[in-house]
Image (tube, rainbow, N blue to C red):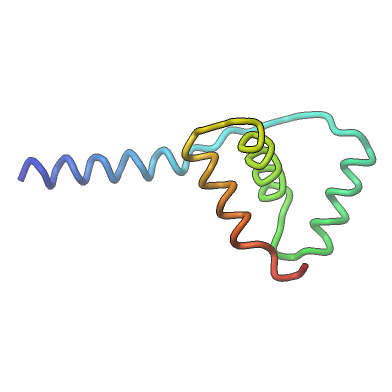
Length: 85
């Protein structure tokens, strides 16, 4: 019984961690913003949130980040690219 309770608690923690979100506000150059907007409008499977998450995860992994959550985001976008390319 203790194992089941511990397992359920661990599963709940994983769900809570994976659903944590942080709002981010930043300034972009007009060129970068317009390029991002054009990309999202021409690729219906992408949105601004997916694009930013993908870009940040790619940057972090390529620059030595070893966090498993970041690597998971990076690998997911790497192996499930947009079908509209």
